[in-house]
Image (tube, rainbow, N blue to C red; front, side, top):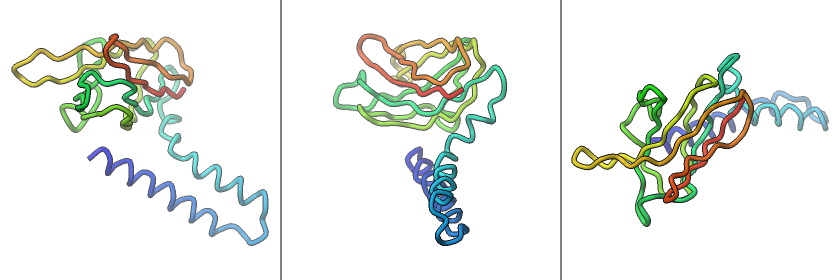
Length: 155
């Protein structure tokens, strides 16, 4: 389901780019490339909607998974223990190298924990913790020594 959302998002960006390029007069040269570049950056527009004192959680990538040869079933909780991602499922299955959109605004000062869901009969595995300490664009890493996930943060 998350993959479908990613494809829809890319298709929307492509459609906006084609529409913008088609509206430009022929021979516009540098102006045409500038207009297209602005439209292709539209997938960062949501980050700008977060507001002061918040950052946008862009995407998470599985660098090294805990379940070797299998998928980790990951989810993120805040410092209060409330699950903030994914919103429409219990977890997102991720294999090594996989990337998933998070698309979530959080406040500076928030503490986030990544967990691997092991089902009702087993305790979930703690995958790492990150602290959102500043309003800046950077990558943070959930790392528990056995797994590593990179989370993109946009100010």
